[in-house]
Length: 506
Ligand SMILES: Nc1ncnc2c1ncn2[C@@H]1O[C@H](COP(=O)(O)OP(=O)(O)OP(=O)(O)O)[C@@H](O)[C@H]1O
Ligand SMILES: [Mg+2]
Image (cartoon, rainbow, N blue to C red; front, side, top):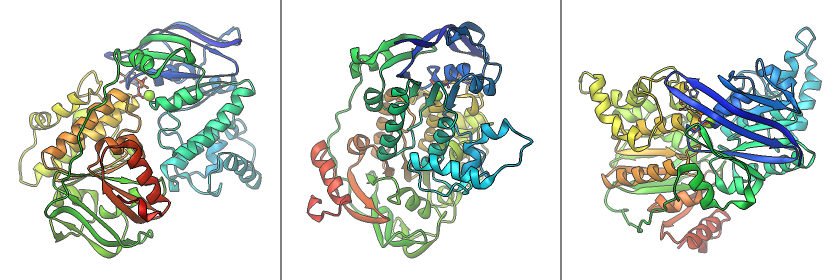
């Protein structure tokens, strides 16, 4: 296999952080290369150095046998390196088609845009990626998954020699991921060189040929063949030891008055007569395929979508919740949003300020003054437990790695001492070690009495954490059962309910 790219001794520092130190990587044609490492290991920084976002402070790069020093992002694209960044890069009010062809349009600023043709060209990408949307739709109307797919279409449209994908599957469903993998394999077979970042090791093992692992900004291994490594080897390279799988026993906490109850709830979005109860200290897992209406149900509870029938009760009393602020302030219901990229954090504020937001709301109700000291006391234990990597609590959240930003948005709600916590896809983008810590924290919170509604599409996560599993499909509850923690039994039961097989409910 012939080499198309290599980087040697790359160095990149930020104030107080050595993000990359003497990092090397080599890419060959016709292969998919995994770039792995814990949150904050330097993956995105390396990608940004390779795509002209950052200038490295040291090291050399070669592309197609010639020295490669991209002057800016456009330069990298012109030289044949395309990228899907981890953070979102779409222009919200522009259409899908305009976003896909943004780079092409930028090349010809004086020409009038032929919209019918633009929409037609965009439609081809939408078809290829099986995105069900009109190319004229503004991207801010799309779901998180569709926005991600538009980003991917935009990168694919550049026909790059090298395509770098930084956690492209983080918010995709298994089906969407499969479609994407089909396309990536085809590109590889046509000779392209791809770089793939993901925290889902199953995916990496399914689609990648070779791997580079970063640890604390350095190479833990460089461009090794993946078939020589097992899952445990990869984990050890990433975190320096093998993975631990907690061995929790099944619990039954569905007793007494529910803290949160949905009674016969229908919504404007089409939820039909949903009944759901979450008791003190109980973790209820809400499972369903993406599109089942789970996040939308959570948002309806929080007053974002209208409830047309039935009611939401908190501690047995009918609750009128108008907003997230209302939920946390009046009812002590916390909400970790699925779309943390846009909803969860104030990027220009510091770590401490962000984690302090919900606490601030709660404490300020009692007329208390909130000093940094108080906020620290409440939040630091969570920041430490999740091992948020930051040079200081004063660091702007926008400067943290993607996964560490996620940790902050989860930590702030864990610290909020809510009586009900609704958590939507908590471990997307979080590395496996942190995921284990996060699971421990969620368990501990439930042990202190917090009622938790966990929305996750990650079946192992659901089976590890939930006391009771409730299955939704097409905006209705199909049924539920106690979690025995027997993986086969549970996953079969869940799939049975999704397919409408009532006998599957144990
Ligand atoms: N613009 C920036 N300013 C300051 N520090 C930064 C900046 N970008 C990244 N860093 C720091 O560099 C380190 C590497 O971050 P990077 O985003 O490359 O990690 P990552 O491997 O992509 O992690 P994740 O899995 O969480 O996405 C982190 O400590 C991060 O806080
Ligand atoms: Mg990253």
